[in-house]
Length: 449
Image 1 (cartoon, rainbow, N blue to C red):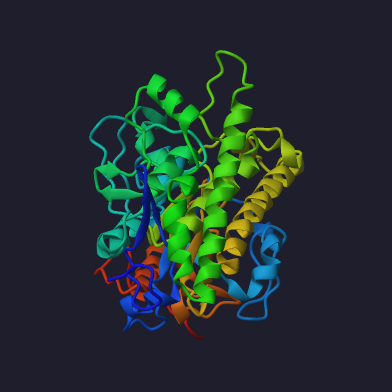
Image 2: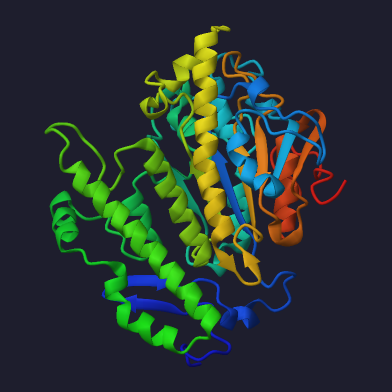
């Protein structure tokens, strides 16, 4: 089949050149590949995790149903109100101690997507459960080049003791392929970018990696001639989509190159991973933008993002909070500390809003990526001072291909398992496991009242 004709373009058509592989965005010419689905486009599933809990009085909206008022922390999502579901009352019982003593941060990270109480160990005998994202990836991953994408914004390790006798694997990973195999997040945006586009060099020596970086040409330069020929055979709408998509890739490359140049000014002896922007906000936005491009090109349909790992010590001087995040959350009611934590919480939502806006601005068939996406944002700790795991801060954005009715605040009975939400969302993707962790059934009212 001719890949540059207007009809029946194969969904697996890619642009190749000198080792680079650039998947194409979803085009009208590919519609026959998805005949039979309700929207003509696949549903993408993403999870964004924030650590250390939130200031719940400043999180929870006033009012329920469609008549609700966004709280102070959620205000950055005001322009996206009609794409939003705020869910109150969900809980993770298995993140509680249950006789295991301290270690709430590790249990929160481990339990967030699994709903399983992890084995307390700092050794190799870790035991958790399969996470919701990986259950989805098993079902739909064969249809894309990457079954799933795991990203994070803080360097992490998976061995050693990170929280009161719990392995670092629990603290630093929310995605689990099996009960004993975490999926550590990729924290270097350059490495994530090259994984998406077939230019992985993680196995190279530092010397060869440096030499390759000096010689690296733009991925779009490598595939440029093929892209030009392809675009010439497409209809006007598809040509615009390809142009916008290739522009987005080029822009990400520019940001990575700028970050690497800034990294050259770091004093000797101070290690800074290549390609990470100087400010945390730009770092987070860049990682979110990589997910948008991955969804746009259908490189993957499942992604997780850890804005921070549990127990995060990240500081935020750009918003007037130079203090470390985790110690502030143990505020004991100190008004100054409470205020700083609330500002951090709102800042995280500002960064998340950037992601949602990008999804909403990216065409996808007869709608946008946000129309065909389900994105969960939240934490497995509500009150960071008391380490509580009930009434969790959770929200949902996107329309799931028409399967979700947004623009509402839904309140569920106390201690409703958060895993019930995951069971319901996977069903919207056509993935139907019998259970996820401690789930007891699907969550009501996401599609209607």
